[in-house]
Figure 1 (tube, rainbow, N blue to C red):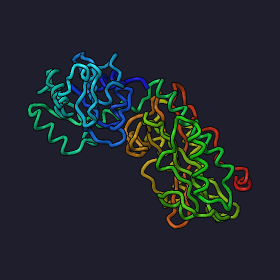
Figure 2: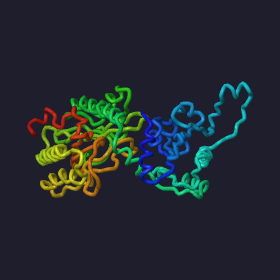
Figure 3: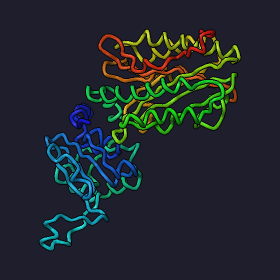
Figure 4: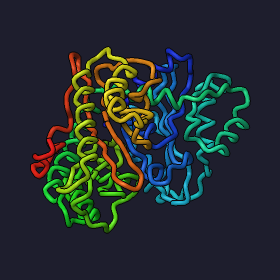
Length: 393
């Protein structure tokens, strides 16, 4: 992926932040275009950090001495801290330069900030990610700095996607859509939830660039009315089969999210009415999508349509932005209290769910890209209605 530290500088300038520390794995990757290995695996701040400055200095990338040779040192100021790995260069070995000072991650980070003359500047940190102990160490080492939370800054930057992000997410979404389309051919009475899930995973993995997201699942009947993983439950004629999930772009962090719900051959007539209503609400929302429509208005188009027929209906939101996680549902949300409007470049998951605990559940969900004059449907392949549901339509 391409580095997007310049994108972060736009927000720093607007918010009056002098230095930003990108310490979560996803935001380190966003800034640098590179995913640090141990950092991504452990989700601990002691393995990598990107320091973005407004002073004109190159973005500094700090990483393990074992890993920084993999960093992009053409476009970044790459600095290392010492690890237990004990690697040495050939020159060090030949000249018997075995001993070397041991520099910790925190020491390298503080030294870099001091070198930028930012000891008393406004420094942005990810408070929603950073462990309290690491934050306390920063306060101790840099007592004159003014630390501010920039967790929301990164989310705001990630809302509107750059062209290369859109193309990569389009590929990921296509993989998920094709895998679900193929899995839908097995969606019938007698199949186990786990069989559907295994088939979906195999199709996704065959792509070579994506993995099934950890929360993806096929559930049916009462299982579809709650949050849970696929079980060895065998689908009956009375059930709804619900898929909810997506894929992750390996260590590039970008993720996808969409859903389908299918009625089996002898469901309660009430379930037919629910699906017809949710499909109708979903269609109305999609028809209304264009730049400039408010999140609040879009929410009420779908919610009010469903609540009119089903007064018990309650939902906090009917969709959300999505990018690199770790949460699938990100700010901004399609909700009654979300300020702002849709803008070109946003990728949203638009969803119309209804869950009845102990009985059944639905989610009707698509991913869309907001364009200059409307939207592009990114999940067009997998049908909302199977051929076996023709009598219900």
